[in-house]
Image (cartoon, rainbow, N blue to C red; front, top):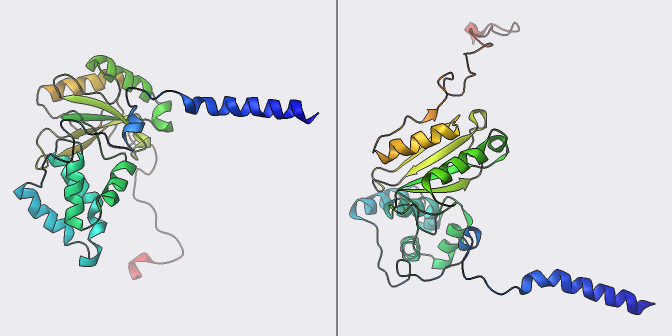
Length: 257
């Protein structure tokens, strides 16, 4: 009686293990690219990298915010500065440079760079467009926003256009749920000195294409809500409540405080 059960259990175990026995793919998915490194001609340990003279002064300023025996606490702002300087992504040599500055083993920097999605481990465009994919934005049409961008630019997610100008990625909640759907444009076109990270809220498929074309022409679209009927996060058409100063509580005289 136990033999059929054992055979059935063995068969089921093989079915479970089968997906893990697939031959290795010849390409990497984006999520896999986040957690390990493969040398390439433009990203390997033999390529020298250091902060620019201007950014070396910024490094000193960043380190001054932390006790001298806690330099490693500066790893995130230093990685961010390195990414801005390097056109929006972090080669392994830049991570090693940060490790040298904060005096830790390189692996401690790799751990941070591979954990946070704000750090790009592969090349991005001069304008890196990030579409919010969290529930409020998704309900309000973020998938249509992303599809419009990918179709207009002729790329897939996390690919760079042939002219190196644009790339499209996904970011989780950026805190603009009341203005959903929204995108962020990380502007690396002018290095760390001119770096911008702008929110564009209440967007539509048509509007994001217009924003792309404005950026292509060197124009700077006004950030914030793209709905002309709204002011910042206020309701369309203006406030319907809280239109005057609130009355003081009756329990005490505020002027006497």
